[in-house]
Image (cartoon, rainbow, N blue to C red; front, side, top):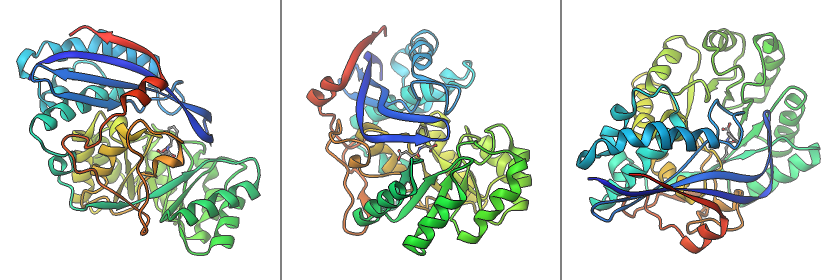
Length: 370
Ligand SMILES: O=C(O)CCC(=O)N[C@@H](C(=O)O)c1ccccc1
């Protein structure tokens, strides 16, 4: 197929509550949505996982906009009529890294291609479940009482797993209080690289709480440190920022730097690489789960399809739309009575974009030359 039209939409959506991590606090969700139309009239959508500032990873929205327009899209357009999702990664290979920008293009092409084929993401990726259990991510709070109230609310809503953001000064005590208040719920923590190997003895104090995992305790480029830490603590080490490809996953597993992997399609360049990571992990007996980047329904829908693959055996950060937004730009995703969310069954990402709602949250539209 050929790309006949493409545009970037800069979107800003208010969050229902501030979301604080070890690298900052978000009050709104700024993102870029890519809309693509093929010569066959198929519309492909994708949502960027990058942040407004390069604090989660080295990518950020302005950088994605620029590298996509000037370096990535021209390479894709050069494929002419031969554009397919499988050809995106090879065509963009000469550009180093920029995985979140590459994910945007590959996902929009895949959405358009699957819509033309009338095939859902779930079928194409190899999903084996119709619904997936929903976990929820709980930010760092100002007070313990606020944390306990938030966790109580999410448990009442039906979430089957709680993830607490931690950082030095907000770790042992919050976890102890949540364990004491709510018993043996499925509980894990996410440090977003906030610690160093010198904190190993301190982090070992989390072992008594029977956590599912500790996510990305050390710097994203410190596989050796994670392998050493994994020998010093009992809580399973999960990697997020460190894993940007199936090769990274194979290396981290071989080095015993992790025993769980958080898979995020936007971090690794798209759903095809996300599936490769799933396959490498499965081949090594390593469980994976689907991470989140506060996606709207445009990103949440294909993430749910990915989370339904066989190796995704831990609840992911695939929360309901209402976790972050009062109004989503697709029909809202909601938990069922079992704390699960249905995997979209329509062609492509399987959800329709609410164009008027999207227009209301759109700051500007950047037409792309194709
Ligand atoms: O539920 C969600 O979509 C967010 C889950 C979450 O905590 N994401 C974290 C992370 O490090 O995994 C994050 C938050 C904000 C920005 C980047 C990443």
